[in-house]
Image 1 (cartoon, one colour):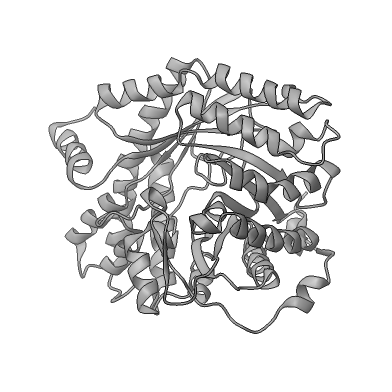
Image 2 (cartoon, rainbow, N blue to C red):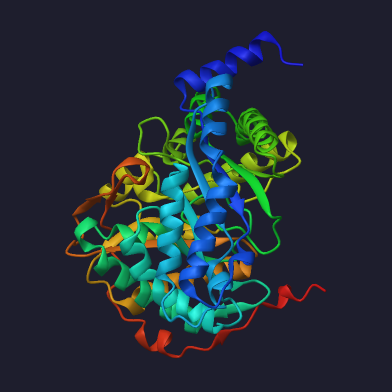
Length: 452
């Protein structure tokens, strides 16, 4: 039973520490929308999304009003469109993306994810067509997000897909150059993608999911940062315990919202994703949590160890609070979306190489990183390959959301606005990896993947 202290602490978390529910995401199965005619497929996609998600916005707004809990984003995820549209002989799947965009706007949500393909072991004709359609689809829509899973611990890395995605990222950047290459901020390349992730841009409704499901992503970097001020100078054992207790309270709130939304929508409750998702607002930064642990600047030596503790403690505390933990669950480090990360990157302390090391111990990967617009496609593919290899070998989800901002160089910044924030242009190594990427083929799965 809650006591007065618990209630007051929760109210303080909401009022002064940036606690919110980052997203309520409704997953929708679209497999029954397949049709040989791409326009008919698109019509079915629009109709089903609107039918299933028509009450998402009023239901979540009602929960916000009743419980006093901010729900920042309302989103939809759908079955990977490569699986849905491949019944058509069309070469371009952009009409389906356009239908998704219209449906999202009709339902009043912030984003819709699932213009996706799962190609870790190989590419079907539908996968190839979807990947080729991504640049146009993202340049001609506003709310659609895309993702491609290029590897897994079980399957290894599909290096042909890795090479293709470097070119896709470059083309997407070029087609949205007038908007700071914004299209790339809606495109994620995964290894070990999960089927119940509520966070964009990588959310999709996996083939193992039910007809519909509600997945909730919580947040609360500001809450953890504030809590840590009470244990300054204390041993890490106490730090870990405090983070666990704080994550427990945050997750309980997420569980309440998730179950309430699922009940009112009449669909199954999927998971609560525990991830600490920062925003550009001061006081809502994962980087500042790490600095509160004793770092002068995020990115200096010791950052990876501090992040490992944070990520582990968040998961342990959240698992105690909910029996339905899933998604990505950990600590996000998207550079442009985190005020402290932005400052550290601008100072030169936080580099792409250090971010890669940090992703070995946290969720999810090299996220919302802007690089010079003239970065070669092969270099982007090589960065994707490095990050995917970390995920494959360590049996964890990793991802790359890289933005080669057209016309920008190191020292510049690109402003996306809103939760996407401002991205300082970070340097990459000039030495070529073109010969490595040109090899193609498959990097085999690691030995420890043979567990059956």
